[in-house]
Length: 252
Ligand SMILES: C[S@@+](CC[C@H](N)C(=O)[O-])C[C@H]1O[C@@H](n2cnc3c(N)ncnc32)[C@H](O)[C@@H]1O
Image (tube, rainbow, N blue to C red; front, top):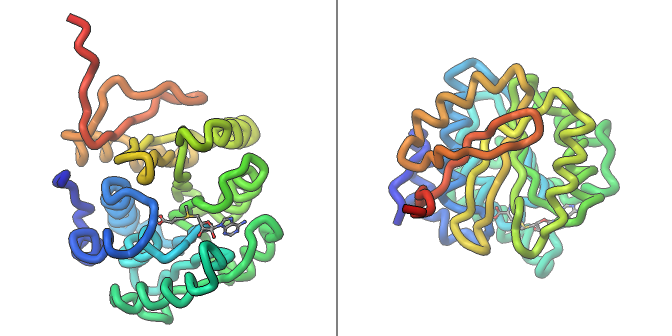
């Protein structure tokens, strides 16, 4: 097992305990890095809610929600009907089992495709989101819509985290992200978290250009053993890449 932690006691306790027992698709590697980012946001005075489209049974949601600071809340959005109608009950059971108090989160059973930014703002009672995980319908137009929803409620220093980037099953999904970056020229891919395996795929972390300094150096320093130094060219930026086992091809 890869030794990586978020540095947030409650998140790390969940990661080394029930994380793998809660059914889900996000890697433990990515959850530790995102938990670290939530802790850093709190330390830097960045306050806001967390939200996720595609909550499923709560694996990633719980890990992030355990990083909430006092007064903050988590919003989990899902149709909660796949693979069966028991998924919402299992999600609530998993939250309770992880010690996530019910007043700290809302499960919103809804289809994000028919949701407007004002619907979302209303559900959030006007609070900004400092960390938004987008992991819902893996189709170009749905992701394009979900990214606009996330953008509409994002804290100025907040992060949008997109799952299943460059996944072999969804080779065209990346075009929705590139289109989003073209529409919002102030947004940058600040970090790519590489996959653990075919199920636990890569995530992109996106923030405003002005917020890059809050995260970039810290990520390279804090996760130095996982820093792939060749990085990545992304639109208008040279992006940090973190990978479970960094190595460079032997060409000598
Ligand atoms: C890959 S799973 C999410 C895994 C979870 N985020 C994790 O890390 O374990 C995708 C989820 O997105 C939900 N979903 C798909 N299309 C959706 C939509 N249009 N609106 C809301 N949820 C949707 C599915 O019901 C499913 O639970």
